Structures are given as structure tokens and as C-alpha cells.
Image 1 (cartoon, one colour):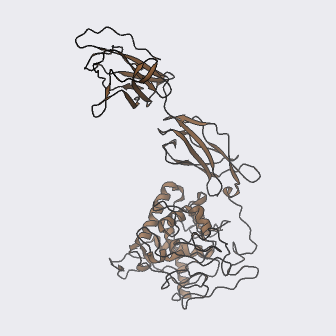
Image 2 (image 1 turned 90 degrees about the horizontal axis):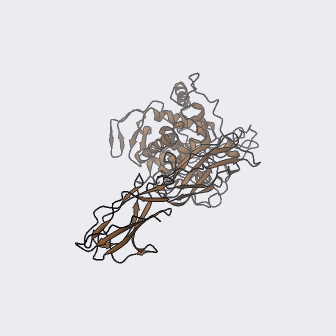
Image 3 (image 1 turned 90 degrees about the vertical axis):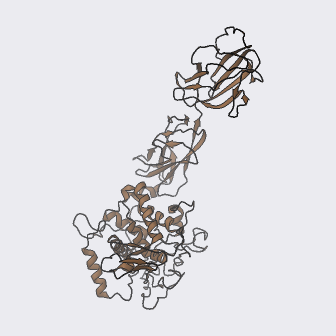
Length: 573
């Protein structure tokens, strides 16, 4: 769970002296991403939270701190978890499925947003304070929690007040919202930030793979670089607007960076103290009982009384607390009111070719002024081999100072028809802008015969030389053009003949039409062998292509033993 702004609570076993020692030890550390790179000390000057909603709605969170000493790996691991007395060994154990989800999320973000530098240990730190690593790893084989993890009702009674946004679809509450799942997303945030992390076609906040990947994307918004203290602190504070939340997550991050190990699912250490004074996660089946405000004996302190001018459980001196604060300007994406077309021409191309026109969009604010430095995602919708240059089904472009952005060229595949390309604003929930891209079949406007040998044969025999043709389009070789070959009745009757020369199918049966033929890279096509039945005379073979090119070739069949009379030259129509 995530925090309001109450004073951090520690486990009763941790004394004030121990807590002070923890602060001193951590302040002296130089863990990557936790220090000010200019002066070598921990910095909070750039930790001002960004405006707007948080991932969790500033719900309560677990306040346990990690052990003072670095973890050491256990000598062995038994059926019930680590065996041994290594320092911090129990707290350093992360349930196997949960750990796998964090590492998979890190790998995907490294590929899709390499500049973010998201460490999986950050996801583990947030997962620790939000849900105690999904209640110690109580998940099934697919990563879904065995029981839903729900935060308290956000009804303004000791917490923020967030009225229902999902009709109870995620949290079961049709009056107010509640944080959901191992990473504690509120429904309104999950609606746009949810991800399918385990490839099952669903975006489930109660699934650790989905939730971990969604948390990674949420933390990496706005071109943040989490290897720098400024980006790291801003990301954590965007998850929950509380300085004490930031401090707690940073301590767990450093602890996990020093060493972790895998433990069986369901055996992870579950946390105790909570920022709202609610009960611990153990032995209770849920780490956050709805509406609970009474403290568990010996684990936490009661919630603080509201300060003058603030709502219950909030601090007017901090963001969202009801007091006077200096608002941070919105991000460019947050000022976008709509996305418009910016002069895109007709999108059409022949299969295999690049489109001459490129998709161009413009992001505008409510006053109609262009908004720059906004990320726009363009996606080819549906099952098609239409892609952007480089083979990508989706690309992200950034608007210029006028609010305009132009996508890379589209390239047609072999699929023909009309397809949709959708433009959406990244980090902003607005209706998308759809474009229609039309892919036409490859064409040829001319067919010629390769070679000039007359096609003659005796009845019952086969034509000696196979027929070869070449297709061109505007003088260039037309490759991959669909071609049909038919033995027709006459020049004026293009229906299939019922006698005379024929092809053979795979079973050796006579057929007189071949479809689905395609020219090669040089526009050439060699037809299969042609056979003669017992009919004599001059017969016609017609070859036609997509685009209207046709070629008619004469086939002469004589009686067995007779001398063939030279036939007329092939004619093209």
C-alpha cells in the first residue's frame, strides 16, 4: 500500500537509537541512483513531487525498514525457505514468482525504454512497501494473487477521497475507489497504465507480472532517467506524494541492491507497521482491511489528528494536503486537449512498396495552439504485415515547437486491403486519431513471351518447351504479381475450353486453369508442362495478371505422325 503524509511508523522492536543508526548508515552510502553525482552525498533537493494523480492515490503503505546490515546469502535453502543465520537473510528473500516478475519487467523496459535505466530492485522496493511482496508471495503459477489485495476505502475518512471511477470492476466498490493488487494501483490509474506482463491477453492489477510491468512504465514516464537521483526521486514521489514514502523506498532499494535471493512462493517475510496505523499483513489474510484505522497492538501508532485547514489524515504542508503550495507547471502532455491531422495525404501503396505519403499529426491545447515536446504513438492496428520502416508495428515520435510530428514512412507487406493506423498521445488519455492505409495488389501493365519457339505437339503427347512470360509495370520488372493461366475456347470467348491441351494437377488429372501463380523477382514466370489430348487444331492459352495485362499464345496440335504446319506468332491483347 502507499502513503498519505503521516509520520513514518517503525516496528516496535526498532528503537529510536537503531532508527537513527539506520539513517546515518544509509546517508553514508554511495549506492548508484541514490546520491547527488556532483557532491557525492544523498540529495533531496530534486525530490519535489510532480502534480496530478499518483499511482496509488496516496493510499497507506508499510513502514518497516530493512535491517541495518547488508544481506548475505544463506548457506542453503530448504523446503520452507532459507536455512542459516546470514545477516538480513530473511528480509533479503523474495518469493520466486514475484522476483521473476520484477526481472522480466526490467528486461522489457530495458528494450522499450532503455534511457530510463529501471532497476528491478526499485520494483522490489515498491512491492515491499506496497504489499509485502504480494503478501509474501501468495500467488498462483501465473502470478495472480490467491486473494485480492485491496487498500482501504478512499472515502476521505483518514485518507484521500476518490469517488468510484471503475464501477467496481477492479476493487469491488461502486461508491469509492481503493488501491488494488500487489503494486496498489487505483482503478483510474490502472485504466490507462495497466499492462499485460504475462502474455495471457489480460491486464489484471492483481497479477504480479501485469502490475510490475505497469509500475515500471509508470515510473519511466516523462523521459525519466532513474540512474540519476533527480529522476529516481521524482519517479518514486509520482507513485506516492510523501517524503517519508520516498525515504522508505530508497532504503529498501539500497538493501536489495546489496544482495537478494529467491525463496519459495508463500514464504516471504510479511511486513508489520503501516503508515495509517492499520493492522500488519500477518497473520491477517489481507494487508489492508477496508476502512481500518485502529492500530494493531505493538506494531504501529494511531493516525495523526488532522492539521487546521486540512482533510483528515493529510498534511497541508505537503502536496495534496489541502494547504497552500506552489503548484508545479503541468507537463506538455497534460496540456494537450486534442490531436489533429497535420496535412496527411492519401495513404496508398502497392504490396511490397513504401507509401509516398507519411502520417503527420499535431497536438493542440484547449486554445488551439500547438504543444511541443509531446510524445505521440502511432500504431498499425490489427493482424497485418503493414509496418513502419524498419519493420515496426508501432513507433513514437515527438512534436516540434509547432506541435507537429511526422511518422516514419509506412511500408506495405503482401496483405492487401484497407488497414488502420492510429495516433495517440503518450501519457494522456485522449481519443486517438485513425488513418486508413490502402494496400493494392502488385500490378503489371505488360506481359511478353520469353522466347519465340512455336508451341507444337502431336495428339497424346506433350509440348516440348515450357511457356515462359515476363511481366513489367511502367517498363520495370513486376515481381510478385498474381497471374492466371487459362486454356480458353477462342479469342472472343475467354471461358475455359473443355478439350484440347491441358495442365496436370498434383494428382495427375487434367485441368485447364491455373491460379495463384506469381512472377519472380525479375517479373518472370514459367508455366508447368502442357499436354495434348486427342483433339487436333489450334488452341489458345491466355495468361493474365493483376492490373489487366494479358497475353494470348497459340498451341498447335497435330495428329500423330502428321507434319505440323507452322502456326501464327503469339498475339498480345
